[in-house]
Image (cartoon, rainbow, N blue to C red; front, top):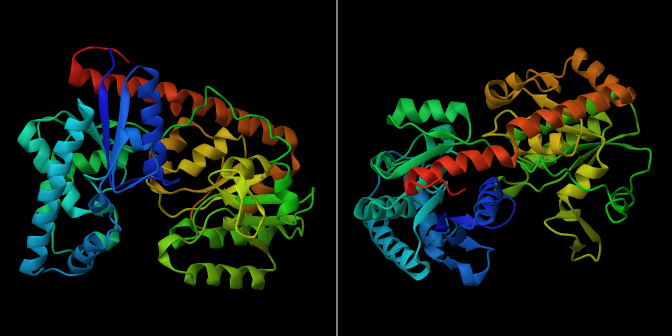
Length: 421
């Protein structure tokens, strides 16, 4: 017998980690007769199973007004407090309505009770659960204490109350062991560790004719060696290291392609990267206008490709991030059987590396050994194939849908008392 499960968050739209992971959870729950409904401020889910509440969106002007007045300062004015409470009261009434409209039996809250992008929403959810004792799975992707921008704030009272809350009917889920330890240390709350996953039981299809147009459309030659940086253009992604690697190879056939746009952090980093690539003689392509969520035609009448298409055509993945909550792009590199350069960020060191993955690892510096390892991977096909097959099989064991299925079963059973997943 399935249950009616309500996913609650600020945004379920696009290709951010929260939207992607929640869709995987919903898919596996759906496979087992549970039905998913969606509540959020920005939604690309079907209208018949969702409820869009503009004030739940962290980009709503009134929510941004609050954020501008509480982060980066240590005191707030009474009108800010008043607005937080009044918006949270309103949002709480919409949660009651959401529960009633779809007869929801369990809430799964996605990131809205850990990252204070929308303080009134977190407060509303917390108050709702406190008033109803509603069974809730709180899926935490990022905590406020992990982000410098929230370290100075005028809302510590609200953060202590709702980000995350300590309530009897809330089961906490963390995505890495560091977050799990920090939640326990800071809040005294235990949590279930559920890593991000991909469908390793079903490998990706062979590249089709459409995806093979990717090189030609980016003016790349068939024998060019594509280094794909499958991330947004933000400083913590360490893209300057990818440029350094390609520069050190001194091979004009090596081209660096960056898949995503700058996002909301401005163009300065992208401009700096372009200048660096020019100085180093690296052919750097920003392909965000050619890579989208679906295969289509962009405003210029050019064909667009999916990220899966880009992976299928890449020869090598660069992932020199300084920090990651988990590292979805790393899993994707393993899934598409591509060799990958990784900067040993903390979650990689604790949760991924000990499993025995074969990657080109760097410690914040592009050394001669790193470059020689990259050269070997490019030249030695047998070595490369052994490496990517090994990584694929490991991922099937540790980061596949079957792992998620087992963890979800335990979480749902804790609520229902019945093992029906």
